[in-house]
Length: 257
Image (cartoon, rainbow, N blue to C red; front, side, top):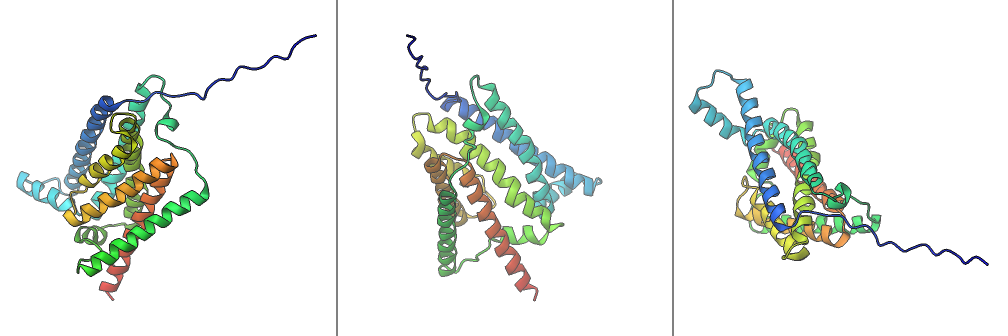
C-alpha cells in the first residue's frame, strides 16, 4: 500500500534590504539629488519667466520663488516623479529585495485605517486649539502666500495632497524606516529619528510649527510600525494636507469677503 506524500513545509519568503550604513549613504544621495533637482527646477521656471535677469535679480527672484505657489507646485511634482524612481532603483540594487515588501505596500483592514485617521484628526484639532490659545495663526504665513500665488490653484492641491505625501512617505517611512528599523536603533528608534528628519526639512516654518510637524511625524511613524503598511501613514499625510489646504482656502476666502 502506498503511503501518503506529505508536502514539505516551506517558511514564508524573506527579502533583503539595505541595513543602516547603506540606508544612510543612499538616503543622503537621494536627499542631495532632491535638493539639487528642486533648485534646478525652480531656477528653470524663474529664468523662463524673465530670461534677461542679472545675477543679483536672479537671486532675489529665487528667494521670492520659495513661497510662489506655482513654482512650489511644479517643483514638488517634478521632484516626486524623479526621486521616487531613484528610491525604487536603489531598492532594486539590493539583491534579493522586493519593492512592495521593502516599502510595505499592502492593504490593511478598513477599521484600522479609520482608527488612525481618527487619531490624526484629533491631533490636528488639538494642535489648532493650542495655536488659538497661544494666539498663533491657524495657518502659517508661508502657506497663505503660497496659496495666494498658486495659479492654477488645483495644481497646488495635486502637489500637496498627492505628490508631496507620496514621495515623503516612500522616502521617510518607506525606504529609511525599513533600513533603520532593521538596524541597531530598532523600529521605535526609527520612528523618532525619522520624525525628526522629516520635521527638519520643513525649514519654511518656525520652531513651533516644526515641533507640530515632528509630533505628526511620530504619529505617522507609529501607524507605519503598528499596521506594517505604508498606505496608512500615506493616507494620514494626504488627509493632513487636505485639512491644511482647506483651512488656507477658507481663511483666504473670508479675508476677501
